[in-house]
Image (cartoon, rainbow, N blue to C red; front, side, top):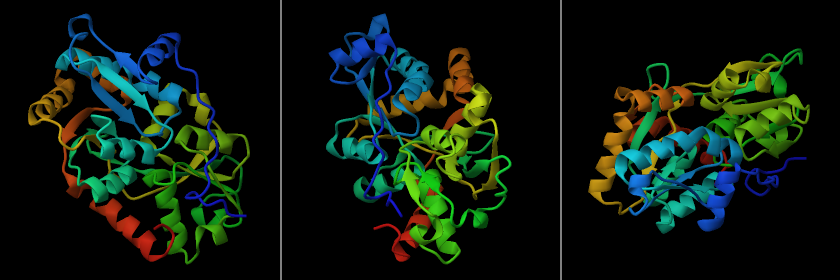
Length: 305
């Protein structure tokens, strides 16, 4: 039975944040606030992250980055955690968030609707690029993508490039529709949940963001132990950081200066290192042309609308 990632999503239990973040959320309509003493009276910058990690993990990973932005810009930063990639795009469309960190697939959707220009993208291993990893359990006997036919598979978010669109494209390249290739599909909503489903034997294969897999391997090796990467996609433009339509040029340029200067500042460089990032660099929409082409092919094959 095929559970369409566009019609079904598994309910995701909200992870509890640290006590400080819970208290902050209660005072900020579900948002977590990061401030420095000297910036408490300044207008806030609302920052959204799509659902690449679970809420607790997102807070842990990005909290120091948000504190740094608050300190350097003089604006408190407010984390707006969402449950799906599409929700972040909706916030941008309504002007209800100022800055968003998007999956590259989510960015193309946002560009199609809002014509957003990316502000910066992270550099890893010298390039602003990342990959989709196809992952199976060690000893499963599955060593290449074609062998996943007839097996259960986990997608992440429905518009995730690395977690859904890339494996869908591989299935189409083999001459199938996803529902006719995999025995069934679950939608895990984020990459770490996909990995958990694989480790627990719920599925036999997953597609995950290389940044996230490599971050988990470096910071919690047990979380990916017993797993094998059997395929690596072609490179795609790194997940960009974008700003809402209508943001003042002054604030956009200030954010650009802060983020691209992090690798030259000892504190900023330390935060980047914890995130597994070398630096942020300015990028433009052309970095994501291959993502747009992949989505167009899936539309042509009637996999996505």
